[in-house]
Image (tube, rainbow over all chains, first blue to last red; front, side):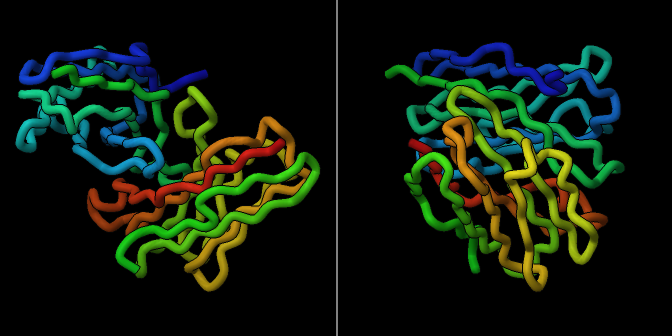
Length: 114
Length: 118
């Protein structure tokens, strides 16, 4: 049973527009959420995170929104740039549980078109 | 080191052979994780080491998989009698560890070891 779901395998956005990547989770014990970005032949790199005590966290062009009641989070990238083309993984953690690291979604392949 | 190092970066082996994958975490990081990513799939948790505690092996898919972490640093993931379904990218990650602020939740990944079983 997938506890973190990214229902869009791919997303195509025009350069300069906003990219919105979505993520849903089922485990109500998750209290920390992260987004990772992955280029081909490289490991995932940390992008941005949010604690469940917040509903928004912003870092430059990247903003993560958390809706706890809907068990939904989203990553907004604005404006989108060609270098943003990558696979984006949503991840979640029960920070009180500790032992099993992060639970990842299957990823969304973001393609920024010129 | 400055980042998480994994070797080999690519490994091609024949079905039935044993393989060893190595991970050198960031110096001082007490937590070490192994994940794998099969084609078209997300990151699948395999095993987790935290300091000197017994590892969490709950993600290992079969008893052909095992991992060690010597001296709280370098880790080796061993796959015995490899099968074609073991083909994947095996990713190692480390973090500062539990109870050390939100930074403990951020894993730093290596570039991965791509395993192909023929």
